[in-house]
Amino acid sequence: MLHSATKFISGHSDVVAGLAVAGSKEIGDKIGFLQNALGTILSVQDSWLLLRGLKTLNVRMKASSASALRIAKYLEKENRVKQVYYPGLPRHVGTAIHASQAVSGGAVLSFALEDEDAVRQFVGSVTIPVFAVSLGAVESILSYPAKMSHAAMSKDDERDSRGITDGLLRLSVGLEDADDLIADFSKAFAKLENRKNLASGSR
Ligand SMILES: *Cc1c(COP(=O)(O)O)cnc(C)c1O
Image 1 (tube, rainbow, N blue to C red):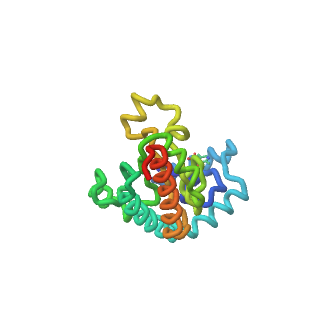
Image 2: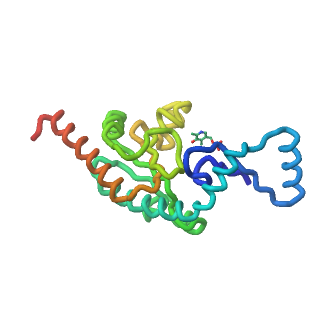
Image 3: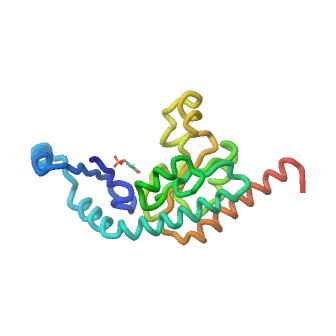
């Protein structure tokens, strides 16, 4: 099995690494031989950072997943949010299968605003999450799949049909206090609301 250690396993946005888990010692030894021959190994610094991160994986995942669930529930109630995608929410598609295979909904969720304009305003207003393409770290990371990770997909055929619309944002929840994140988002949504009211001329 292959894992990325760049995300939650190291967890601090400072290592690019991966691991191959072999089902037998024989295969493990073969991989080890090839690594030794080809030099495809981690540096000393990266190994040290990875081992350090690994020690707190369990508590980081628990804390971030608990916050993600709270934030997902909060986002469901925001009227500028059209849809929340998080397998820890009861109404999410496939939640029963997910619950039979995992101990929580995890630390990553996504939510859809109405369009790119709303996304730009929201991203410009939030102050706590880092706006970047990554995920799986101690800091919360907000990313915009349509223009970042999934920009290479064609809009109509691939992105929109998979729900990766121009209004979709992905949030990887870190270790900040969930109340602080929710307050930060609430302020950003309130700003969106004000602008909408100004634009439509209402008071
Ligand atoms: C995910 C990611 C990569 C790629 O890492 P993999 O372990 O190959 O998945 C590289 N850089 C950043 C910033 C990333 O978030």
